Image 1 (spheres, helix red, strand yellow):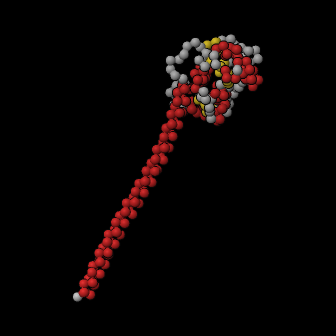
Image 2 (cartoon, one colour):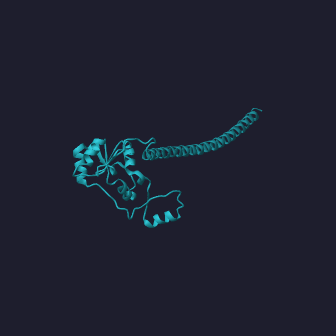
Image 3 (cartoon, helix red, strand yellow):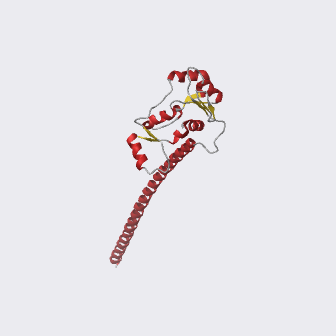
Length: 215
């Protein structure tokens, strides 16, 4: 959902269709129903066969002219979705306006040149047949809102997993550098000791030679 404020409206308008399952074709749908060991009845939406719906662009333009562009949007325009499931999205939300409030929804829906179902941000549904439904708010939060929160949480988790991976890589690089440093330090200490021994021997030799010359 692009606009979180519209989540409840979209959920109320979709109703039971919100929980339908999109599959590629009717063969897959049949296989899932027969062999999927489903725990409850499920409605399948075969993407290859489903009949899509959409609002005439002239009706969209007229609706915006009537109530203002910011007060009415097509439901589909408020959703983010994978293009592969576009047929299912248009099947469920294609013929639906989302309006700011009930008066706006009635103005749009009952106009003689529009006659398209509308839902308000509070979840009231206005049907061109003349019916209005709503008036009470669900006690639970919107499923679409929860899905959006889950999406954001997963994105946040992936971001931090990426940062953790980067930090671990840097730690491994530091460990390798530390190991190389310790190896070089050890070699340096050995060589330094060897030089000291050689220097000591050299000094002793010179000393002996000086003593011999004196004698």
